[in-house]
Each structure stands twice: as C-alpha cells, then as structure tokens.
Length: 636
Image (cartoon, rainbow, N blue to C red):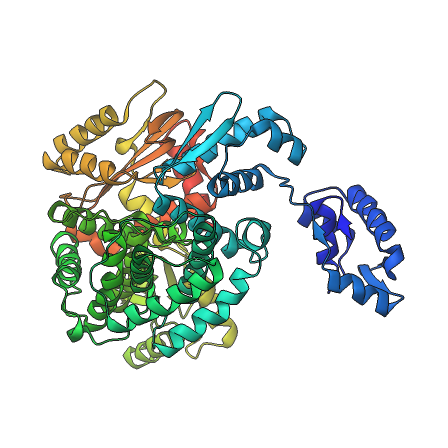
C-alpha cells in the first residue's frame, strides 16, 4: 500500500501506538480539525481491505481498532511508505540539496516542480537558501541552457556538505526520509551500525553518540559516492595514533565491500582524520605534548585572568578538560572539518559573559596561528570556561536582601533572632540593629525591608512584625520578601540612567553610532580613548547581536573606568552586520564591578525571553523605558 500524500503517512504513524484527540493531531500536523477528520476518513478507506480502522473514542480521541490481525500484520510487514514529496519550504530546501549533491546529471526545476506538485516560481524562491548553503562549502551551481543546473566543487566539499546536512536532519528526526530513503544506498546505514561499533570496541576508541552518528553518515555517504565513481584524490594526513590507523584500515576494507570497489589511500587517510577529530580523549593531561594544544589552553586562561580579572590558571580540572577538547579540536580546524553545535544559540544567551571572554581570548590567539576556529568550536570551549567560572566565582551574582532588625528586648534576644533568621534564610544580610526609639527617629531606611519585634511605622519599606520566638507564619511572611529578585531591579537603578539614554529616529551607520556614544563616555570620564577602537575590534570578530533586534556592543576586556550602560532605541533600525538592531545597549564594564557583570547580562537575556524589543522601541523617554524594563525583570 502507498499513501497518496505524506500527511496521511504521518497521521498513520502517529496513531499506531497512542490515542490522540483531534486538536492534538491538528496541532502536530499544522492543519484544521476538519482536515484531520477528512484525513481519517481517507485513511479508513485505505485500511478497509487490511482489517483495521481508526475509531473515535469520545473523551480520548482516535485509536486503532484491528478486526483482522493476520491481514493487518501483512500490511505492517509491507511497511507502507509515503511518496517522497516535501511539503514545507524547509523540506523542499533539504530535498533540493540532496538532489544536487547526489545527482550525476543536470537538474531542471521544471521537472522537480512537476514531481513535487509545486510551481517553478516556488522552487526558484527556495533556491536562494540552497545557493547560500552550498556557498559555505565553496560549491557552485552552474546553469546550462536547455539542460538545467549542475553542481560543481571538490569531492571533499560535496561529501562534507551532504554529511553535515544528513547529520542535522538525523538529529531532528532519525526517520527523516532524506536520511533513511533518499540520500544513501539502501541498507548501508543499518549495516554500518554494527560494523562501526565492533570496530571501535576492538580498537578501544570512544566516541560520543553524536560523533558515532556523524561517522556512520559520512561512511554511508562515502559508500554511495565511491560506488558511483567519485573517489577522493590527493589527501595525505599527518600521523595519528596506532589504534586510529588500525580502525581506519578496518573500516576502509568494509566500505570497499559495501561499495563494490577498492578504496584509494586518500579515502583511508580521510577516515583517520575523521576518527581522530571525534574520538573522546581518555588520557592524563601530562600525556598531551602537542605544543599548540597546551599553548592554546594556557593562552585562553592567561587572557581571561589579564583582561577580565578571573584567575582560573590553577584549576587543574579545567586545564585538563580544555586540553582534551582542544587536542581533537586542533585536528578539526587543521583539516577544516566542521562539527555542528546544536546548542550554540543557547550557549550565547545563557553564558553571555563566558562567551565574550572565550571569544576574545581565541580571537587574540588567532593573530599567532594560521587556524581559523569557528563559532561552533568556540561554543564548546565556552561550556568548559563557564563551568570553571561557576566553580570558583559568584558568577551568577545576586544582590542579597538587606534588612534592618528593630528590637528592644536586649542583646541576647537580638542574637537569638539573628540565629533563627540565618538558619532559615542564610541569604539575609542584617545590616544593623536599631532600638524602637532610634528607628522612629531615623528619616529613612536604605535597606530592603524591616523586621521588628513590635509595631512600628513604615518608612517607604515593607515591615514584618515577629514575636521574639517567630512562628512559622511569621517566617513565611519574611520568606515572601527574601525570595523577591532584587538583583536585576537594583542593576537597572545602578547602571542605567537618563543621561545615557537616547532615541534615534534618523538613519545612522554602526561606526558613527559607536563614535558618538564612546566620545560622550570619554568626555564624562567613564572610558579612555582606546575604548572606541576595542568596541570596533570586538564587533569585527563576530556580531554582538543577541537576537530579536537587541545588540550588545562592548569592548574586548573590562576597559571602563566606571561601569555604565548606554541605551539606544532605534525604531527605524540600524544595520548590524546581516541583521537590523532596534535596541542597542553599549556596555562599559570596569574591573571593579566585574563580579556584578553577569547580572547585567541577565537583564538583556530577560528582555530577549520576554520578546520585549518592540515594546522597548515604543518607549518615548527614559522613564517609560525604565518602567517597562522593571516590569520585565520583575516577572522572572
């Protein structure tokens, strides 16, 4: 049996093992409930001769009812498949990529449009993304009149592009048709699972699950290309470990059998590089002697210590973790092997300060080495640095609640109450203890709230009345005030002000904006003349766009004399690399406040999570901006 469209096949698969209501099916398939009912009717018509039907159970949803198990088992054995027709724009891009990367002949968009039941104009729009993707691997499409389009580029680049695409799709869905049916020779990926597992076990080579999946896909791609007459030419690898050479030799012999053709020496050399670049190192740091590995690890840690005041040089665990990662990373960057980092955007947003430190250190290192280290690789290094920072510093800076204790019951009772509070809420900072008379005579309270053993007047701060031996209810009332997040509101008050806030309603380029803001900060004594050059250099390395139109330009290192945030709202937008920035926060952070810097970053991440860019842009002045900002940070 063959389904007339892919949606019916998806619906059939969804209802195999669970009962699902119409609303859930409609949401998963991105259609209306009416379409779901029509599809169920169509499926039941197809299944009628196979002894099964989908029945609607009220209150539960659609479930599979099998009337003839024997006939239905025959259907299951036959494995009904959908027609290989992409439905969404993203799916069409993936299918187009696979077609161009695996076709030996020119392809006409008219033919593909007829096959996939779309217009040629639709595919022509999709081709912009296809060309952009191929350009990353230096692959080009040439159009020949009356013949169509054909892909040109090195065999190594074609394999890298196809493998990376399949790896990305397999990460999302292991049963994705391009991975399981379209791009690879039938049965080869399944055979490679056992083959590679046996080989790596025999030679004591450890890989992550992602690394093993990537190698399996690369080997399957290699089998197809070699069997179709596209071998690798002229590739020589530097010497690797003996166990890696032996594993590559065994895998090469197996691939030769699967492809039905002998493998040339460059194929085995390339396998060595792939295995060496993805194996998990399980050796002591003292055994790693490669100068560039050791040098880069030490350089990163020294740079962070010098420019950011965080001393991680004596962290043996971090040093070992960096070395084991960098050893394989150097192999990857040397041979330009791109390894995807699916968590890259999350790393940038959740570890923004560690990201800036590592990026600055690696970029500085780049002046002394021919290797170009990609953002994906830097993201993995950031995780190690971030863990090291959390291990040694209060990197998640929090402003603890500051409290005034008002008590007239004597020194012993004060100490007892302080002990109870410390035991229950160790984060409380009791800044001072006042008598009732002293409290009433004071003009104001700078602390966050007041705890008193007798009724007192409020001085614009909350007051909690407790007995000398506080009850559980009284302690709960204190807890409600203790657990309020004061860090981000306090940061907003401390580092954001009207003097460093502006709205730009006219066209301006990025460099002019930097000069205008930095000149003002320099005149006010916040930064030196070198600050502008450092901000420009940092922007040239990688865009400081955080996401959703929010940009965070800043210097390399903590160069400011005093910490301040300059806020710019640009409703018309300012070109920011390949994107457009509407809300810009220029950060000037000094070494004196570096412990608090992480909390400043948290404010911007909160704006991103709140999707606050458009609301921030609509603010007419600093007061409106601060009110909205306070609302955002108070919700988290």
